[in-house]
Image (cartoon, rainbow, N blue to C red; front, side, top):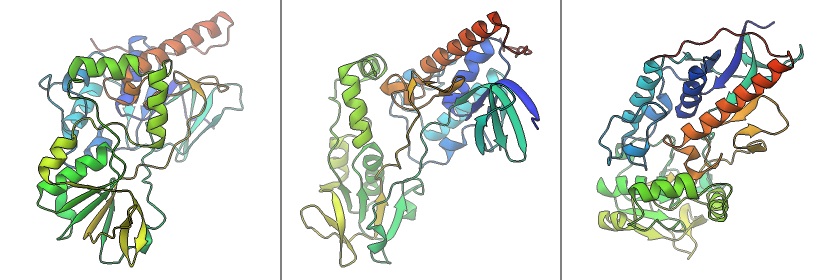
Length: 358
């Protein structure tokens, strides 16, 4: 039995879900955003303390509302969470919190989808999956072989250096996340190793407007450089962006080869060097998530289903706060076009418009 019907249900109340909600509201569509958090922005509040956006505030705004911070600054994770909360409030977006979606399946009664939320069942003509990438840490199979006195943390468990045991810290994974956590550890006075292949870094002159043009307009699924970068992201980390090699060296971070196994309970690098850390941080990425085949977020073979908030939905910036708005606008326009076509065929249901904040 269906408890409620909406024209569109958006799963995820982060930046992607709010951005598509903004465009749906401008169309006066009937929609609901579902989010598992207790507050809008909680997915950002739960990250490590020193986290900042890799993009400047000038390029971190969602559609219709700039980021309230100095244009050249890199906002903190708490600034970002508060901005998302203020954004939803300003545009009166209908977000239902503390709501976990258990399942989405076809509606057998004749079109659309059923969204299972606990004991309730919602129905919708369109479903937008806007949760972004799943963050299930990927930890090497040999991790349990490390000595019991070595503290092991994943990047989802790390908050700040107060968690570290006294002594050296080994950060395994040399991408942006690993580099930032290694920088934290070294500044806190821990001898720090950063293990892994150097992912490279953008030249220092590629900053500001030029950097944004690169990630927002050049590195797309339709260009050769974009496809190469997409493949690089799928097999390793993106080039270092905010914390670069010179900052790591100045803080005293020592680069070592990839961690390939364990010898006598100690992590072993590719050059057969056994390290003796007190703490190991696994910054080795996340379990890959297979998105359904899609074109710019429009899922192929499943009419009315969309994905949003992942890098390279269209461009590298599709996974950034400032880049998701363009994808959200495209999906909202696709919904409007689909509805218009259905109405011409007499297939669409009547819906009450959602008031737009002015």
